[in-house]
Amino acid sequence: MGWLAVGDTYEITLVEGQVVARSASDASMEGQLSTLPADLRDRPEVIELQRFAEWLDWHAAECAAQVDNWMVSSLPVPTALLARVWPDEAWRSVLRDLVVVGEGPGEVGFLRDADGSGDLRVVNLDGETVSISPRTVTMPHPILLPDLDELRRFAVELGLVQGVEQIHRATWRIPADLDGDADEVTEFSGAVYRSWFHLSARATSLGYKVAGSEVIGRIRDTGRVFTAAVDIGNPYYEEEGHTGRLTWDDDRGRRLRLTDVGPVAWSEGMRMAAALHAGRTATADGAA
Image (tube, rainbow, N blue to C red):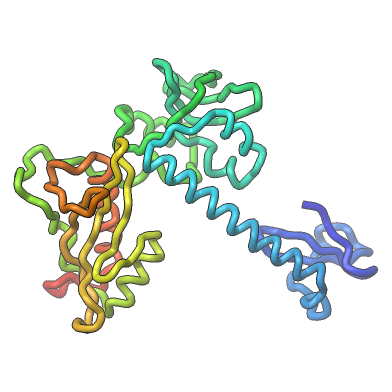
């Protein structure tokens, strides 16, 4: 953005989300001040610019959360909507380079551009930039991408960095030898935290919700809604915090057998449990 005059002495602008000032008589970069002068900090122009910077941060986080939801849920997104939001840098930074899948055979690639003509430009697995014109596209969860390993290699070759974690997202596939009667996973149980509150803070910082004695994540998978839950104990009866079993419920709150859990719900539930386990102080046997 440009520089805004503050009185006759200074001009201000945003640089990497921070308000910076320079002398109005020296428009060169050398004239930029390393710290905001004290007599500017309470000026209305500075306060409004700081509020604008806060709004930009909020807007960027909201865009990322929305695109992450589209991706995790593999929801169809109208191409007209992508074209409408593309000029916004916050939207563009989280949409660019996501793998999108159109409605026809071969309509798959890394999204590079969207415009009002109804076309999307994507880089396909042959390395060619092509135009596709589907009515909607999906940004599939990586567990649903058949060419995931190839897409990962290709992204590394092109130096692509996704604004929303998709192809490099940690994934877990449902084991083929599951016990048909089992309804819980204990692979990530036994991680110990200094307190329940440290554990719950870890959960919320990762974007999950804490409900009673569980950390939960809701996942839409092939039209169904699953709730993955990790037991974390009760803060009123236990001094330490610890992770327990991982389970899944359906949209009516009924506990599911593991064989009834969808592939995306399984992967995202395991990802949640693994992330909670990774932040541990120690495991139940005392290992860090």
